[in-house]
Image 1 (spheres, rainbow, N blue to C red):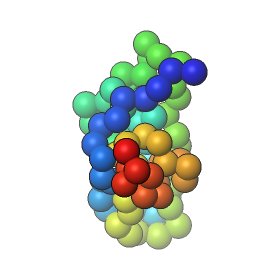
Image 2: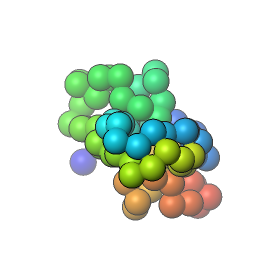
Image 3: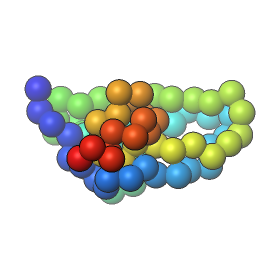
Image 4: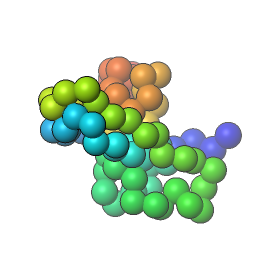
Length: 79
């Protein structure tokens, strides 16, 4: 399986709104990080759809290696 591009070795802090679907870039090629812009179409990656139950600030994974999917789990500290 191909490896995603590591965009950065720290998370993206984003303010999200409840009941809105967000699409997290899994491939690392999007110019709209941490969100998908369709750049994955030339790869085998598919963006991850995620939504939230409340408005809040969240930390999206920037290294693309989180075991928590779109949300940062601290894996970037080991890279």
